[in-house]
Image 1: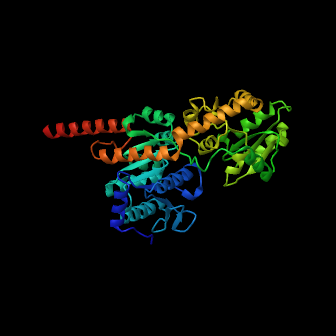
Image 2 (image 1 turned 180 degrees about the vertical axis):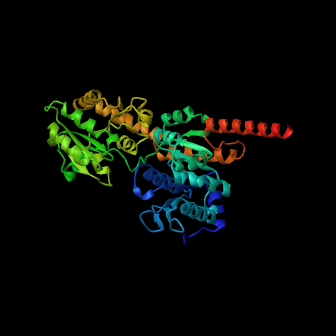
Image 3 (image 1 turned 60 degrees about the vertical axis):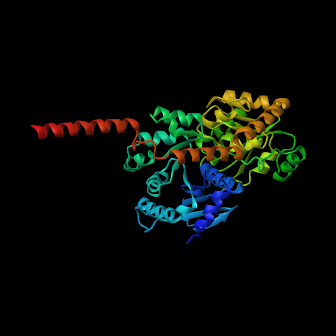
Length: 430
């Protein structure tokens, strides 16, 4: 059984931190260690480091320990009980039981990702009289819940739509919500954050040492990509762009990551004749040495919310090339990075050539990237912004009616019910 703080301890924590509200992070499949999972943990840790208690609660399909403390963050992993094929019923019961017994340990539920588990926690928040915010990672997530007709989506959609506030990583996600008829006042634009102390620029000596330790070319201009090797990350475009660059350009690409497309991408590099100018480094949980070794960062993704990899590279003081999509545009909108159109190999190749041959341009973009991150995306800024949203939602909860379905569906259903009632009434009068 997880340890519980006594109510007086919770009250003392709230008093010590003034208006700070304690979040409980709901994280589906936390141990998958993807983008939103990492961000949820880092965000909880950022709260704890600022003296604000935060916990993280997830499901446990991999049978990890039910309770773990990592960097001051307590991670609770819940199994569906009883165990049977109706795992959503079991998980709902588990989360309801756990969150009810720990209701004195948090002030607000913060659900990461637009998922069935997040939807299940919305009625739990209503029962506990706690505000709940749901973070959305990409526009695609909203479209899927809007258009899918499967039974599970039809069941969970109205539950999810009753969240008190939606947290949007980018303007593109916010605009997608608005296009679905959601009141913009229910959407808070809160981007991902990054630990600017942990991801700091490397010195010249540190860069040389990192290249030696990683067995990377010392003299080449080194471009780094980090991420999963899947089609939407656009690594195929990166290889095509490299193939069109003159061999006399001293440029080497490091691809850090693994995934379903790795074998196909390695074969593509061979067929393009660039295998000697590419290092497939595989997966490494410690990305800092690779960032330290690099001269520039390239991220030609086809679909993103707001990628942690981009924030980490810019925080580490690397000039970046990325696609003009989603949150990537928001991060680099002030010229702190080079933006290229999606799926445009020619534009990507041109940008890579410019950075490879112009050291002064790299230096200017590196400085601008670090300044942009410190001003907007450091965890100090993000925690401050989130706390403002938490307080706003907690103060206004219950004052505004929230529809329990997509706006158009709710309107049509109401009209149908009104027609049926009128018909019933007329029938009785007759």
